Amino acid sequence: MSNEKSVNSSAAQSATQAGQPPASAAREDDAIYQKDRLVARVSEPEIDLSAGQIRFAEIYNSDELILADECEFRQHRILVRKIVYATKVERSAAHKGRILQGVTAQIIS
Image 1 (cartoon, rainbow, N blue to C red):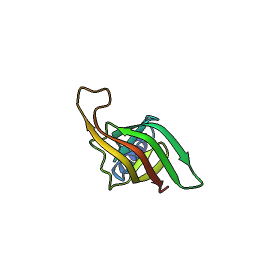
Image 2 (cartoon, helix red, strand yellow; image 1 turned 120 degrees about the vertical axis):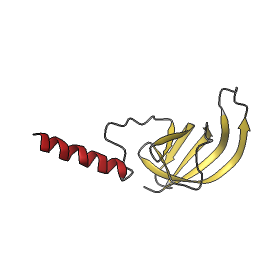
Image 3 (cartoon, helix red, strand yellow; image 1 turned 60 degrees about the vertical axis):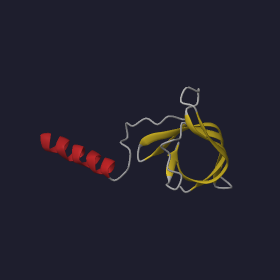
Image 4 (cartoon, helix red, strand yellow; image 1 turned 180 degrees about the horizontal axis):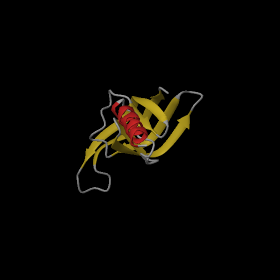
């Protein structure tokens, strides 16, 4: 039995190292992730599968979001393609850090 447990543990570690989140990792519905880290929050997402796009009214708390890299939103891998307006807000504001408005992202998978 201990050998069986060890094999399962090794498989879980391999999946995590390969960049796949463990099955028990809960993702927040209004969050964007990169490398299994929450890097931004979103408001008013519109998923258009026929166009292969997701449009966000706003992406906020996004200082750690690397725009040139792929990210994950819900079950989709996405790449930000268009930003209408970007600003940086005071740390004491309700939405802290960089705020991106009118964002369009391409669905990669």
